[in-house]
Length: 241
Image 1: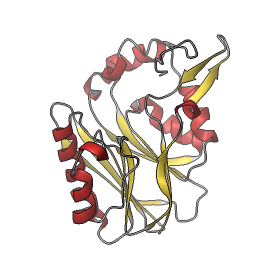
Image 2: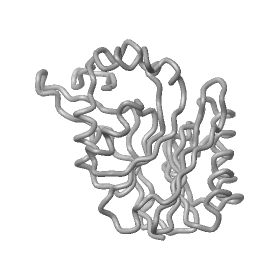
Image 3: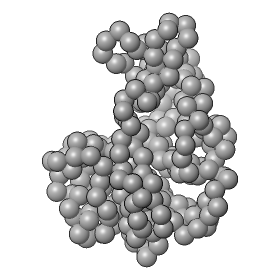
Image 4: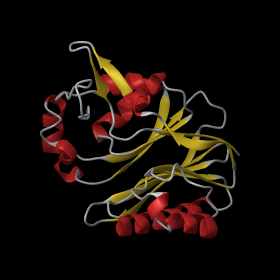
């Protein structure tokens, strides 16, 4: 759904924005996309809209989805996160070595909310792990380090990308030093970012960087204002393995 933005340049809409989000994602340039907090009813539709194969892991509050999803289709602000969520990995079908050959999901914690780690291995030899860590520095650090351990054990010596919403910032968490020294992951995104793409056993062609906020805006033609599709700026990395 659209997110409120201070000022008079953006509109907050209480309607389903799948068409806007799907078109935005389809037009963007990427080979692999890692998404968090995706309504499960969007997963297959997003894969179809973007010409991708998908792998998902359900996260929190999905036990109410049979009741909440019909409401969310009409008035998404009413159920909010109670519609249920998922982590979603999308892999564009037209990329060499981009066939998913192995899949795995692990639960990082059950309380206070379920947090999951989704993992895939591609035919080209790259492994990808997607997560959304808990809020709060201590809980976030535990989730991230547990995800790093599980993902590296699963991937072995294969190149590995660990990405998602870590809910911790490099400027205020020692976890990133441990991610590098213990697990061999390359440096994170900007010091104040909570969204990261970390690489192990590969090379970064360009440092991971976040988009400027306005790049996630699309126009609302009824009001001549903008719709901000996410409360997080996407982060982008170019790698070679």
